[in-house]
Length: 123
Image 1 (cartoon, rainbow, N blue to C red):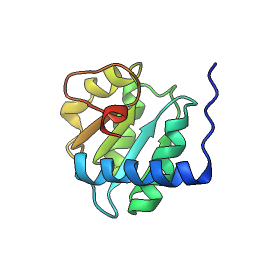
Image 2: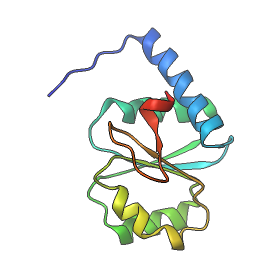
Image 3: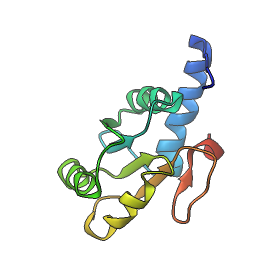
Image 4: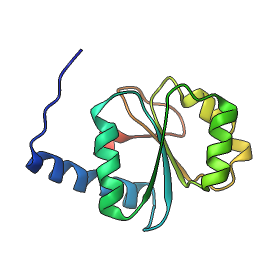
């Protein structure tokens, strides 16, 4: 129910910080792939612009994906990072043993989860 408004200046600054999170905390480089499955939150746009800024390939996904769908996308894309919220994190964790390319996981939201980096904390 909250509304978030960013000026272009704020988006520029925040996307720079988000690109640094992807590059430094997640260890991603130009050409690496990221799967982002988020509901309609402002961070979706921030991650999208940050990927463009850092030369990272952005794969969006709907929050209605099942664990089987997530595994397929991880294997097909060879993504090194997965970005989601607290509700989809368990589905991602259930397919981790079969996703050999995944190196980092970012969670968007207030909560913390073992093995996940918190996007807002790093930002």
